[in-house]
Length: 188
Image 1 (cartoon, rainbow, N blue to C red):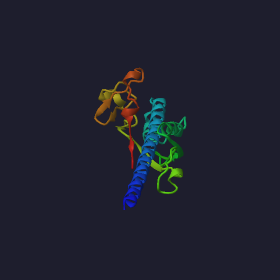
Image 2 (tube, one colour):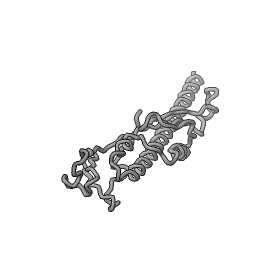
Image 3 (cartoon, one colour):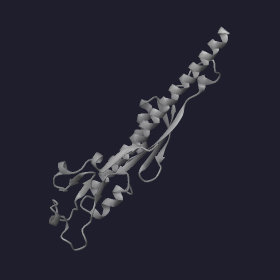
Image 4 (spheres, rainbow, N blue to C red):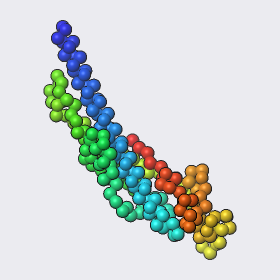
C-alpha cells in the first residue's frame, strides 16, 4: 500500500511538472506575440510619421494597411528564446493581429510516467493592435485645422483616447508616440 501511495505521489509530481512546463510555454508564447505586435505598432507609427503631411493616408496606417519595413517575428523569436522556448510559428492573423507559436527548450523531465523526458510543451498566443485615434478630414476647399485652432491649417486635429493633439510637424516632441496611437494586448 505504501508503494502504491508513493507511485501516486510521483505520478502527481509528473503532472505538476508538466503543468509548470506548459505554463512556461504559454508565457513564452504570450511574450512572443506581444513582441511581434509591438514591433508592428512601432513600424506603423513610423509609417504614420512618413505620411504625416498627407492626412488622407492616415486612416490606412491606423487600420494597419501600410507596408512594414522589418520582420516583427524576429523580435518575437528573441522573446521566446529569453523564455526558454523556440518560435515554431509566427505571422499576421489579420491586419492588426499577430500570432506566435512556441515549443519549450526544456522537457518535462524524468518521472514515473514513461516518455515525459522527451515531452516538450507547446503553446500559442495572439496579440492585437488597437488603434486609439480618430480624426476628421476637413471638407474639400475648407480652411482646415486653422479655424478649429490646430497648429497647421492642413493637418486635422487627432484625438487619441481622451487626449487631443494639435499637430505641428516642425515640433517632433509634440507628436504622439506609438503608445499614444495604438494599444497592444493579448487577444486570447
